[in-house]
Length: 522
Image: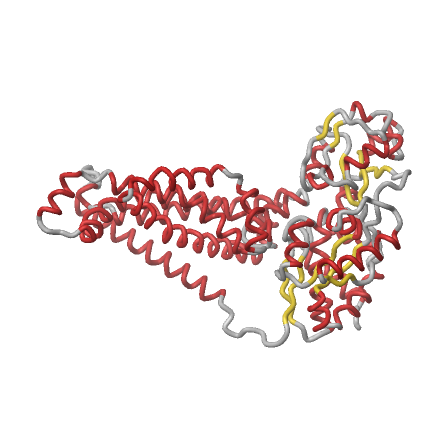
Protein backbone atom coordinates (compact mmCIF):
# COMPACT_ATOMS: atom_id res chain seq x y z
CA UNK A 1 0.00 0.00 0.00
CA UNK A 2 2.83 2.41 0.84
CA UNK A 3 4.37 1.74 -2.56
CA UNK A 4 1.14 2.66 -4.34
CA UNK A 5 0.89 5.82 -2.24
CA UNK A 6 4.43 6.71 -3.31
CA UNK A 7 3.50 6.11 -6.96
CA UNK A 8 0.44 8.35 -6.66
CA UNK A 9 2.33 11.12 -4.90
CA UNK A 10 5.07 11.12 -7.54
CA UNK A 11 2.99 10.22 -10.61
CA UNK A 12 3.86 13.42 -12.48
CA UNK A 13 7.60 12.80 -12.14
CA UNK A 14 7.26 9.11 -13.06
CA UNK A 15 5.20 9.90 -16.17
CA UNK A 16 7.64 12.63 -17.22
CA UNK A 17 10.65 10.33 -16.83
CA UNK A 18 8.83 7.53 -18.63
CA UNK A 19 8.20 9.83 -21.60
CA UNK A 20 11.88 10.82 -21.61
CA UNK A 21 12.81 7.14 -21.55
CA UNK A 22 10.55 6.36 -24.52
CA UNK A 23 11.97 9.25 -26.53
CA UNK A 24 15.61 8.35 -25.84
CA UNK A 25 15.02 4.68 -26.64
CA UNK A 26 13.14 5.51 -29.84
CA UNK A 27 15.94 7.80 -31.06
CA UNK A 28 18.60 5.18 -30.33
CA UNK A 29 16.66 2.40 -32.07
CA UNK A 30 15.92 4.47 -35.18
CA UNK A 31 19.61 5.35 -35.52
CA UNK A 32 20.63 1.71 -34.91
CA UNK A 33 18.24 0.48 -37.62
CA UNK A 34 19.39 3.13 -40.11
CA UNK A 35 23.02 2.10 -39.53
CA UNK A 36 22.63 -1.64 -38.89
CA UNK A 37 20.42 -2.77 -41.77
CA UNK A 38 22.62 -1.25 -44.57
CA UNK A 39 25.75 -2.73 -42.91
CA UNK A 40 24.04 -6.13 -42.77
CA UNK A 41 23.18 -5.86 -46.46
CA UNK A 42 26.72 -4.74 -47.29
CA UNK A 43 28.45 -7.69 -45.62
CA UNK A 44 26.03 -10.12 -47.27
CA UNK A 45 27.47 -8.97 -50.61
CA UNK A 46 31.06 -8.23 -49.52
CA UNK A 47 31.99 -11.47 -47.78
CA UNK A 48 35.46 -10.20 -46.83
CA UNK A 49 33.86 -7.58 -44.56
CA UNK A 50 31.75 -10.15 -42.75
CA UNK A 51 34.15 -11.31 -40.04
CA UNK A 52 35.78 -7.90 -39.28
CA UNK A 53 32.46 -6.06 -38.89
CA UNK A 54 30.74 -8.79 -36.88
CA UNK A 55 33.92 -9.11 -34.81
CA UNK A 56 33.99 -5.40 -33.96
CA UNK A 57 30.29 -5.32 -33.03
CA UNK A 58 30.72 -8.46 -30.91
CA UNK A 59 33.67 -6.90 -29.04
CA UNK A 60 31.65 -3.72 -28.50
CA UNK A 61 28.84 -5.83 -27.04
CA UNK A 62 31.32 -7.37 -24.58
CA UNK A 63 32.54 -4.01 -23.21
CA UNK A 64 30.78 -3.08 -19.92
CA UNK A 65 28.21 -0.36 -20.65
CA UNK A 66 29.45 1.97 -17.90
CA UNK A 67 33.03 1.70 -19.18
CA UNK A 68 31.90 2.56 -22.70
CA UNK A 69 29.84 5.44 -21.35
CA UNK A 70 32.82 6.79 -19.41
CA UNK A 71 34.92 6.60 -22.57
CA UNK A 72 32.32 8.63 -24.50
CA UNK A 73 32.04 11.51 -22.03
CA UNK A 74 35.32 13.30 -22.96
CA UNK A 75 34.28 13.27 -26.61
CA UNK A 76 30.51 13.85 -26.43
CA UNK A 77 30.13 15.54 -23.05
CA UNK A 78 27.23 14.74 -20.73
CA UNK A 79 23.49 14.39 -21.17
CA UNK A 80 21.61 12.39 -23.77
CA UNK A 81 24.19 12.25 -26.59
CA UNK A 82 26.69 9.75 -25.08
CA UNK A 83 23.86 7.60 -23.69
CA UNK A 84 22.19 7.38 -27.12
CA UNK A 85 25.51 6.55 -28.82
CA UNK A 86 26.24 3.75 -26.33
CA UNK A 87 22.77 2.22 -26.75
CA UNK A 88 23.13 2.43 -30.55
CA UNK A 89 26.46 0.59 -30.40
CA UNK A 90 24.97 -2.15 -28.20
CA UNK A 91 21.94 -2.47 -30.51
CA UNK A 92 23.90 -2.97 -33.73
CA UNK A 93 25.00 -6.61 -33.36
CA UNK A 94 21.54 -8.29 -33.43
CA UNK A 95 20.37 -6.03 -36.28
CA UNK A 96 23.49 -6.51 -38.44
CA UNK A 97 23.70 -10.24 -37.78
CA UNK A 98 20.02 -10.91 -38.45
CA UNK A 99 20.05 -8.80 -41.62
CA UNK A 100 23.10 -10.70 -42.88
CA UNK A 101 21.58 -14.07 -41.93
CA UNK A 102 18.20 -13.27 -43.46
CA UNK A 103 19.65 -12.25 -46.82
CA UNK A 104 22.30 -14.97 -47.14
CA UNK A 105 19.85 -17.77 -46.23
CA UNK A 106 17.52 -17.07 -49.17
CA UNK A 107 17.48 -20.01 -51.57
CA UNK A 108 20.07 -19.68 -54.38
CA UNK A 109 17.45 -21.10 -56.75
CA UNK A 110 15.20 -18.11 -56.01
CA UNK A 111 18.03 -15.68 -56.78
CA UNK A 112 18.89 -17.62 -59.94
CA UNK A 113 15.27 -17.53 -61.12
CA UNK A 114 15.09 -13.77 -60.49
CA UNK A 115 18.28 -13.25 -62.46
CA UNK A 116 16.90 -15.43 -65.24
CA UNK A 117 13.86 -13.22 -65.74
CA UNK A 118 16.11 -10.17 -66.09
CA UNK A 119 16.00 -8.52 -62.65
CA UNK A 120 19.01 -6.37 -61.81
CA UNK A 121 20.96 -6.82 -58.55
CA UNK A 122 19.20 -3.81 -57.03
CA UNK A 123 15.79 -5.17 -58.05
CA UNK A 124 16.61 -8.60 -56.62
CA UNK A 125 17.59 -6.92 -53.35
CA UNK A 126 14.50 -4.74 -53.04
CA UNK A 127 11.89 -7.11 -54.50
CA UNK A 128 13.18 -10.53 -53.38
CA UNK A 129 15.85 -10.51 -50.69
CA UNK A 130 14.72 -7.75 -48.32
CA UNK A 131 10.99 -8.75 -48.35
CA UNK A 132 11.87 -12.39 -47.60
CA UNK A 133 14.48 -11.45 -45.00
CA UNK A 134 12.25 -8.91 -43.20
CA UNK A 135 10.88 -11.35 -40.58
CA UNK A 136 14.44 -12.28 -39.55
CA UNK A 137 15.59 -8.64 -39.64
CA UNK A 138 12.64 -7.65 -37.42
CA UNK A 139 13.54 -10.42 -34.97
CA UNK A 140 16.95 -8.75 -34.58
CA UNK A 141 15.35 -5.33 -34.14
CA UNK A 142 13.01 -6.85 -31.55
CA UNK A 143 15.94 -8.20 -29.51
CA UNK A 144 17.75 -4.84 -29.72
CA UNK A 145 14.66 -2.88 -28.72
CA UNK A 146 14.11 -4.81 -25.49
CA UNK A 147 17.77 -4.54 -24.44
CA UNK A 148 17.78 -0.84 -25.37
CA UNK A 149 15.02 -0.09 -22.87
CA UNK A 150 17.13 -1.56 -20.06
CA UNK A 151 20.38 -0.01 -21.21
CA UNK A 152 18.85 3.45 -21.46
CA UNK A 153 18.44 3.57 -17.68
CA UNK A 154 22.15 4.46 -17.52
CA UNK A 155 21.39 7.81 -19.24
CA UNK A 156 20.47 9.16 -15.79
CA UNK A 157 24.03 8.50 -14.62
CA UNK A 158 25.23 11.45 -16.73
CA UNK A 159 22.17 13.69 -16.55
CA UNK A 160 20.37 12.26 -19.59
CA UNK A 161 17.07 11.66 -17.79
CA UNK A 162 14.82 8.65 -18.12
CA UNK A 163 13.64 6.08 -15.59
CA UNK A 164 17.20 5.38 -14.48
CA UNK A 165 16.97 8.62 -12.47
CA UNK A 166 14.53 6.99 -10.05
CA UNK A 167 16.56 3.79 -9.87
CA UNK A 168 19.87 5.55 -9.15
CA UNK A 169 18.21 7.94 -6.67
CA UNK A 170 16.53 5.06 -4.88
CA UNK A 171 19.77 3.11 -4.59
CA UNK A 172 21.57 6.21 -3.35
CA UNK A 173 19.01 6.95 -0.63
CA UNK A 174 18.10 3.33 0.26
CA UNK A 175 14.55 3.98 -0.95
CA UNK A 176 13.11 0.72 -2.29
CA UNK A 177 9.89 2.41 -3.37
CA UNK A 178 11.82 4.78 -5.57
CA UNK A 179 13.83 1.92 -7.08
CA UNK A 180 10.61 0.04 -7.89
CA UNK A 181 9.02 3.22 -9.26
CA UNK A 182 11.78 3.29 -11.88
CA UNK A 183 12.26 -0.44 -12.42
CA UNK A 184 8.62 -1.50 -12.82
CA UNK A 185 7.74 1.06 -15.54
CA UNK A 186 11.00 0.11 -17.32
CA UNK A 187 9.96 -3.57 -17.29
CA UNK A 188 6.46 -2.73 -18.51
CA UNK A 189 7.94 -0.52 -21.23
CA UNK A 190 10.22 -3.38 -22.35
CA UNK A 191 7.22 -5.71 -22.64
CA UNK A 192 5.25 -3.12 -24.63
CA UNK A 193 8.19 -2.50 -26.95
CA UNK A 194 8.55 -6.25 -27.50
CA UNK A 195 4.81 -6.50 -28.28
CA UNK A 196 5.01 -3.55 -30.69
CA UNK A 197 7.91 -4.97 -32.68
CA UNK A 198 6.29 -8.42 -32.52
CA UNK A 199 3.26 -6.90 -34.27
CA UNK A 200 5.53 -5.41 -36.94
CA UNK A 201 7.28 -8.77 -37.33
CA UNK A 202 3.95 -10.46 -38.05
CA UNK A 203 2.97 -7.71 -40.46
CA UNK A 204 6.09 -8.09 -42.60
CA UNK A 205 5.98 -11.90 -42.62
CA UNK A 206 4.44 -13.07 -45.92
CA UNK A 207 1.15 -14.93 -45.55
CA UNK A 208 2.67 -17.98 -47.20
CA UNK A 209 5.27 -18.25 -44.39
CA UNK A 210 2.79 -17.92 -41.53
CA UNK A 211 1.46 -20.96 -39.67
CA UNK A 212 -0.90 -23.23 -41.58
CA UNK A 213 -2.85 -23.86 -38.40
CA UNK A 214 -4.63 -20.56 -38.80
CA UNK A 215 -7.13 -19.96 -41.50
CA UNK A 216 -6.04 -17.41 -44.08
CA UNK A 217 -8.93 -15.13 -43.15
CA UNK A 218 -7.93 -15.18 -39.47
CA UNK A 219 -4.40 -14.25 -40.43
CA UNK A 220 -5.69 -11.25 -42.41
CA UNK A 221 -7.80 -10.13 -39.43
CA UNK A 222 -4.76 -10.43 -37.19
CA UNK A 223 -2.73 -8.34 -39.62
CA UNK A 224 -5.39 -5.61 -39.63
CA UNK A 225 -5.23 -5.58 -35.83
CA UNK A 226 -1.43 -5.38 -35.91
CA UNK A 227 -1.58 -2.48 -38.38
CA UNK A 228 -3.81 -0.55 -35.99
CA UNK A 229 -1.39 -1.26 -33.10
CA UNK A 230 1.66 -0.20 -35.10
CA UNK A 231 0.10 2.95 -36.58
CA UNK A 232 -1.37 3.95 -33.22
CA UNK A 233 1.98 3.49 -31.48
CA UNK A 234 3.82 5.52 -34.12
CA UNK A 235 1.27 8.35 -33.80
CA UNK A 236 1.63 8.27 -29.98
CA UNK A 237 5.44 8.45 -30.14
CA UNK A 238 5.25 11.27 -32.71
CA UNK A 239 2.89 13.14 -30.37
CA UNK A 240 5.34 12.70 -27.48
CA UNK A 241 8.17 14.16 -29.55
CA UNK A 242 6.04 17.13 -30.64
CA UNK A 243 4.90 17.67 -27.05
CA UNK A 244 8.53 17.98 -25.94
CA UNK A 245 9.33 20.67 -28.49
CA UNK A 246 9.22 24.07 -26.85
CA UNK A 247 7.51 26.27 -29.42
CA UNK A 248 7.62 29.22 -27.05
CA UNK A 249 11.27 29.15 -26.06
CA UNK A 250 12.31 31.45 -23.25
CA UNK A 251 14.04 34.50 -24.48
CA UNK A 252 16.92 36.03 -22.65
CA UNK A 253 20.03 34.69 -20.95
CA UNK A 254 20.46 31.06 -19.93
CA UNK A 255 23.06 29.41 -17.70
CA UNK A 256 23.42 25.72 -16.83
CA UNK A 257 23.89 24.56 -13.25
CA UNK A 258 25.25 21.04 -12.69
CA UNK A 259 25.90 18.72 -9.77
CA UNK A 260 27.33 15.35 -8.80
CA UNK A 261 25.21 12.27 -8.24
CA UNK A 262 24.27 12.24 -4.56
CA UNK A 263 21.58 13.81 -2.40
CA UNK A 264 23.45 16.85 -1.11
CA UNK A 265 24.62 17.79 -4.59
CA UNK A 266 21.11 17.59 -6.02
CA UNK A 267 19.81 19.84 -3.24
CA UNK A 268 22.60 22.34 -3.94
CA UNK A 269 21.89 22.18 -7.66
CA UNK A 270 18.22 23.12 -7.24
CA UNK A 271 18.98 25.63 -4.48
CA UNK A 272 21.57 27.42 -6.62
CA UNK A 273 19.31 27.41 -9.67
CA UNK A 274 16.27 28.79 -7.85
CA UNK A 275 18.32 31.37 -5.95
CA UNK A 276 19.65 32.73 -9.25
CA UNK A 277 16.25 32.69 -10.96
CA UNK A 278 14.55 34.34 -7.96
CA UNK A 279 17.01 37.23 -7.87
CA UNK A 280 17.79 37.81 -11.56
CA UNK A 281 16.24 37.66 -15.03
CA UNK A 282 18.52 34.77 -15.94
CA UNK A 283 16.90 31.50 -17.05
CA UNK A 284 18.56 28.44 -15.51
CA UNK A 285 18.82 24.94 -16.96
CA UNK A 286 19.37 22.32 -14.26
CA UNK A 287 21.82 19.52 -15.10
CA UNK A 288 21.70 17.76 -11.73
CA UNK A 289 22.95 14.25 -10.98
CA UNK A 290 25.66 14.12 -13.65
CA UNK A 291 28.13 11.71 -12.04
CA UNK A 292 31.35 11.73 -10.05
CA UNK A 293 33.92 14.47 -9.49
CA UNK A 294 35.83 14.04 -12.76
CA UNK A 295 32.63 13.80 -14.83
CA UNK A 296 31.16 17.05 -13.52
CA UNK A 297 34.45 18.95 -13.63
CA UNK A 298 34.93 17.78 -17.22
CA UNK A 299 31.42 19.04 -18.00
CA UNK A 300 32.40 22.45 -16.60
CA UNK A 301 35.67 22.76 -18.50
CA UNK A 302 34.07 21.47 -21.73
CA UNK A 303 31.31 24.09 -21.54
CA UNK A 304 28.52 21.55 -20.95
CA UNK A 305 27.62 23.40 -17.73
CA UNK A 306 28.42 26.88 -16.43
CA UNK A 307 28.73 26.32 -12.70
CA UNK A 308 28.40 23.80 -9.90
CA UNK A 309 29.25 23.57 -6.21
CA UNK A 310 32.25 21.37 -5.43
CA UNK A 311 34.34 20.67 -2.34
CA UNK A 312 37.75 22.14 -1.52
CA UNK A 313 39.36 18.79 -0.67
CA UNK A 314 38.17 17.24 -3.93
CA UNK A 315 39.57 20.07 -6.04
CA UNK A 316 42.86 20.26 -4.13
CA UNK A 317 43.66 16.54 -4.25
CA UNK A 318 41.59 14.89 -6.97
CA UNK A 319 41.55 17.67 -9.60
CA UNK A 320 44.77 19.59 -8.91
CA UNK A 321 46.67 16.50 -7.67
CA UNK A 322 48.18 17.99 -4.49
CA UNK A 323 48.99 15.97 -1.40
CA UNK A 324 46.21 16.36 1.22
CA UNK A 325 46.81 18.97 3.93
CA UNK A 326 44.60 20.34 6.69
CA UNK A 327 45.42 24.07 6.25
CA UNK A 328 42.02 25.54 5.24
CA UNK A 329 43.33 28.91 4.05
CA UNK A 330 46.21 27.44 2.04
CA UNK A 331 43.93 24.90 0.37
CA UNK A 332 41.42 27.57 -0.64
CA UNK A 333 44.06 30.03 -1.86
CA UNK A 334 45.78 27.34 -3.95
CA UNK A 335 42.51 26.21 -5.53
CA UNK A 336 41.47 29.75 -6.36
CA UNK A 337 44.78 30.58 -8.06
CA UNK A 338 45.31 27.32 -9.94
CA UNK A 339 41.73 26.89 -11.12
CA UNK A 340 41.90 30.31 -12.74
CA UNK A 341 45.35 29.74 -14.20
CA UNK A 342 44.92 26.18 -15.49
CA UNK A 343 41.23 25.92 -16.34
CA UNK A 344 39.90 29.48 -16.55
CA UNK A 345 37.48 28.69 -13.73
CA UNK A 346 36.59 31.16 -10.96
CA UNK A 347 36.32 29.96 -7.35
CA UNK A 348 33.83 31.92 -5.25
CA UNK A 349 33.70 32.24 -1.44
CA UNK A 350 33.62 29.06 0.63
CA UNK A 351 30.24 28.15 2.07
CA UNK A 352 29.78 27.53 5.79
CA UNK A 353 29.60 23.74 5.79
CA UNK A 354 32.55 21.37 5.68
CA UNK A 355 31.44 18.07 4.15
CA UNK A 356 34.67 16.22 4.83
CA UNK A 357 35.27 12.48 4.83
CA UNK A 358 34.75 10.42 7.97
CA UNK A 359 34.70 6.78 9.04
CA UNK A 360 31.46 5.50 10.55
CA UNK A 361 30.43 2.39 12.48
CA UNK A 362 27.17 1.28 14.06
CA UNK A 363 26.39 2.34 17.63
CA UNK A 364 26.60 -1.29 18.73
CA UNK A 365 30.08 -1.73 17.21
CA UNK A 366 31.30 1.53 18.77
CA UNK A 367 30.08 0.49 22.23
CA UNK A 368 31.30 -3.10 21.97
CA UNK A 369 34.86 -2.13 21.01
CA UNK A 370 34.96 1.30 22.71
CA UNK A 371 35.56 3.14 19.45
CA UNK A 372 35.59 6.93 19.57
CA UNK A 373 38.46 7.90 17.27
CA UNK A 374 40.08 6.48 14.15
CA UNK A 375 43.14 5.70 16.28
CA UNK A 376 40.93 3.43 18.42
CA UNK A 377 40.08 1.54 15.24
CA UNK A 378 43.69 0.38 14.80
CA UNK A 379 43.20 -2.11 17.67
CA UNK A 380 40.49 -4.06 15.84
CA UNK A 381 40.98 -3.22 12.15
CA UNK A 382 42.46 -6.67 11.48
CA UNK A 383 39.07 -8.21 12.27
CA UNK A 384 36.98 -5.62 10.40
CA UNK A 385 35.82 -5.37 6.79
CA UNK A 386 35.62 -1.84 5.40
CA UNK A 387 33.14 -1.06 2.59
CA UNK A 388 34.12 2.34 1.19
CA UNK A 389 33.05 4.03 -2.04
CA UNK A 390 35.18 3.33 -5.11
CA UNK A 391 36.31 6.95 -5.19
CA UNK A 392 37.49 6.74 -1.55
CA UNK A 393 39.55 3.63 -2.36
CA UNK A 394 41.42 5.38 -5.16
CA UNK A 395 42.10 8.79 -3.62
CA UNK A 396 45.29 9.82 -1.84
CA UNK A 397 43.16 11.64 0.73
CA UNK A 398 41.03 8.50 1.05
CA UNK A 399 41.78 4.94 2.11
CA UNK A 400 45.43 4.64 0.89
CA UNK A 401 46.56 7.76 2.76
CA UNK A 402 44.38 6.97 5.79
CA UNK A 403 45.91 3.49 6.18
CA UNK A 404 49.42 4.98 6.06
CA UNK A 405 48.64 7.77 8.50
CA UNK A 406 46.93 5.60 11.12
CA UNK A 407 48.62 2.26 10.42
CA UNK A 408 45.29 0.62 9.64
CA UNK A 409 45.25 -2.91 8.23
CA UNK A 410 41.68 -4.03 7.54
CA UNK A 411 40.74 -7.69 7.14
CA UNK A 412 39.24 -6.93 3.73
CA UNK A 413 38.16 -4.01 1.56
CA UNK A 414 34.94 -4.26 -0.45
CA UNK A 415 34.24 -1.23 -2.66
CA UNK A 416 30.54 -0.34 -2.75
CA UNK A 417 29.37 2.89 -4.36
CA UNK A 418 26.53 4.93 -2.90
CA UNK A 419 24.14 4.05 -0.11
CA UNK A 420 24.30 0.23 -0.43
CA UNK A 421 27.37 0.44 1.79
CA UNK A 422 25.06 1.61 4.61
CA UNK A 423 22.96 -1.52 4.06
CA UNK A 424 26.14 -3.63 4.19
CA UNK A 425 26.97 -1.99 7.52
CA UNK A 426 23.51 -2.65 8.96
CA UNK A 427 23.63 -6.30 7.82
CA UNK A 428 27.14 -6.70 9.31
CA UNK A 429 28.59 -7.56 5.88
CA UNK A 430 31.01 -4.76 6.73
CA UNK A 431 31.91 -3.12 10.04
CA UNK A 432 33.28 0.23 8.78
CA UNK A 433 32.31 2.56 5.94
CA UNK A 434 33.40 5.95 4.71
CA UNK A 435 30.86 8.75 4.96
CA UNK A 436 30.47 12.48 4.60
CA UNK A 437 30.00 14.52 7.75
CA UNK A 438 26.81 16.16 6.45
CA UNK A 439 25.32 12.90 5.13
CA UNK A 440 21.66 12.50 6.09
CA UNK A 441 22.08 8.71 6.13
CA UNK A 442 24.29 9.05 9.23
CA UNK A 443 21.26 10.39 11.04
CA UNK A 444 18.89 7.92 9.39
CA UNK A 445 20.89 4.87 10.53
CA UNK A 446 22.02 6.43 13.83
CA UNK A 447 25.71 5.76 13.18
CA UNK A 448 28.77 6.74 15.20
CA UNK A 449 31.27 8.94 13.37
CA UNK A 450 34.85 8.30 14.50
CA UNK A 451 36.88 11.40 15.29
CA UNK A 452 39.75 12.11 12.91
CA UNK A 453 42.13 12.65 15.84
CA UNK A 454 45.20 13.09 13.61
CA UNK A 455 43.43 15.61 11.33
CA UNK A 456 44.19 13.52 8.27
CA UNK A 457 41.22 14.48 6.13
CA UNK A 458 41.67 17.81 4.33
CA UNK A 459 38.96 20.48 4.54
CA UNK A 460 35.97 19.87 2.29
CA UNK A 461 34.22 23.21 2.49
CA UNK A 462 31.75 23.69 -0.32
CA UNK A 463 32.98 26.12 -3.00
CA UNK A 464 31.11 27.31 -6.08
CA UNK A 465 33.06 26.84 -9.34
CA UNK A 466 32.03 29.09 -12.23
CA UNK A 467 33.39 29.37 -15.75
CA UNK A 468 35.26 32.69 -16.03
CA UNK A 469 33.40 33.77 -19.16
CA UNK A 470 30.07 33.01 -17.46
CA UNK A 471 30.95 35.07 -14.38
CA UNK A 472 32.17 37.92 -16.55
CA UNK A 473 28.85 37.98 -18.39
CA UNK A 474 26.70 37.49 -15.26
CA UNK A 475 28.62 39.03 -12.31
CA UNK A 476 25.45 39.03 -10.19
CA UNK A 477 25.86 35.26 -9.70
CA UNK A 478 28.77 35.83 -7.31
CA UNK A 479 26.73 38.12 -5.06
CA UNK A 480 23.86 35.61 -4.88
CA UNK A 481 26.03 32.59 -4.03
CA UNK A 482 28.10 34.56 -1.51
CA UNK A 483 24.84 35.55 0.22
CA UNK A 484 23.58 31.95 0.26
CA UNK A 485 26.78 30.36 1.61
CA UNK A 486 26.63 31.48 5.28
CA UNK A 487 23.17 29.93 5.74
CA UNK A 488 24.43 26.44 4.87
CA UNK A 489 26.11 25.14 8.04
CA UNK A 490 27.01 21.51 8.77
CA UNK A 491 23.85 21.04 10.84
CA UNK A 492 21.62 22.64 8.19
CA UNK A 493 23.02 20.51 5.36
CA UNK A 494 22.69 17.28 7.34
CA UNK A 495 19.07 18.12 8.12
CA UNK A 496 18.33 18.95 4.47
CA UNK A 497 19.91 15.66 3.39
CA UNK A 498 17.91 13.81 6.04
CA UNK A 499 14.67 15.24 4.69
CA UNK A 500 15.43 13.61 1.33
CA UNK A 501 17.08 10.38 2.49
CA UNK A 502 14.69 9.50 5.30
CA UNK A 503 11.53 11.61 4.98
CA UNK A 504 11.28 10.97 1.24
CA UNK A 505 10.99 14.58 0.09
CA UNK A 506 12.30 15.50 -3.34
CA UNK A 507 15.61 17.41 -3.46
CA UNK A 508 13.91 20.24 -5.37
CA UNK A 509 11.17 20.66 -2.76
CA UNK A 510 13.70 20.63 0.09
CA UNK A 511 15.79 23.27 -1.69
CA UNK A 512 12.76 25.45 -2.48
CA UNK A 513 11.36 25.23 1.05
CA UNK A 514 14.72 26.24 2.52
CA UNK A 515 15.03 29.27 0.21
CA UNK A 516 11.51 30.33 1.16
CA UNK A 517 12.37 29.94 4.85
CA UNK A 518 15.49 32.11 4.75
CA UNK A 519 13.82 34.53 2.29
CA UNK A 520 17.06 35.04 0.35
CA UNK A 521 17.00 38.37 -1.45
CA UNK A 522 20.03 40.06 -2.94
